[in-house]
Image 1 (cartoon, rainbow, N blue to C red):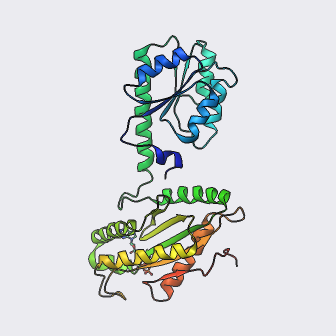
Image 2: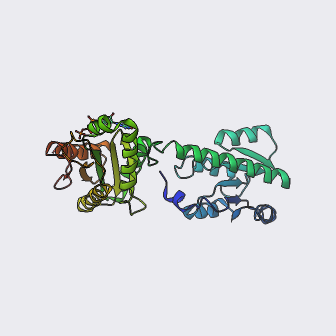
Image 3: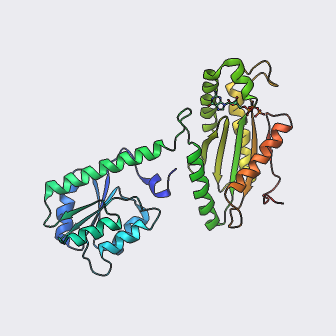
Length: 317
Ligand SMILES: Nc1nc2c(ncn2[C@@H]2O[C@H](COP(=O)(O)OP(=O)(O)OP(=O)(O)O)[C@@H](O)[C@H]2O)c(=O)[nH]1
């Protein structure tokens, strides 16, 4: 799962460092030191830093403490209270030398302290160390969201994606669609071909389903077992049904033999589709329940088909 900010960051490009200091000489010194290694963003005040953060999320922030108007401690507190900037590593660069100040910074969530006058090798070493830690943490967090078998998002990614989109689209007043896709008679497949080939079938299915993702905001995840979920923001029911039809074409194109005991001689899927305008009265899971109900209809009426609610409805209607 990625935020809009994170989608803008480029994994192969140099790390981005934001330096906030009201003294021009300090900014020049740090800029000259960091520029050969990183993309450096500069702000002379907290107001300027806020402006930068509106469009670009840096990988690390070097923050002066004593500045007019808003000081560095207050800004750190503000950033730690914001979902978008909570995980941004902050290093205070300050002339304050008291233990109590340093402790305050750590309590507010800073990762380190660098004292002025600045030692160039120490500044570079600390920035490098914290960027490496951040890179590893990000990598582990990303891995924790990936399903090991299929390489697509896992159940945790689904939970996070649905919760985030539910909140975002509620604020925008836009609709959210969901597809629940389940392989038909997969037990028979496993029984006939064996579990290992069952795993390969799941991998091939995930790859085929991935092909129908065309918008950056659409997400495909493995809900569990032989069940997959698409989360489609800003997509009305008709659009979601169109995506379901495309995925049926991709699954048919796989042309994978099914067990002779199954209803169809090729691997097929059933799909339940639902669409809702997220609101405060229902939990995000209500969308899944609607789509799952449609999946149940699809299974009950012969499998290998798409079922959808005629129009957005609340689950208790
Ligand atoms: N190979 C493999 N099989 C799995 C995995 N996860 C779930 N399954 C199998 O998927 C099968 C699901 O079976 P059921 O829930 O009975 O459903 P079904 O046979 O697909 O029947 P319908 O859903 O009614 O079409 C079970 O045999 C599970 O063991 C997996 O990671 N790998």
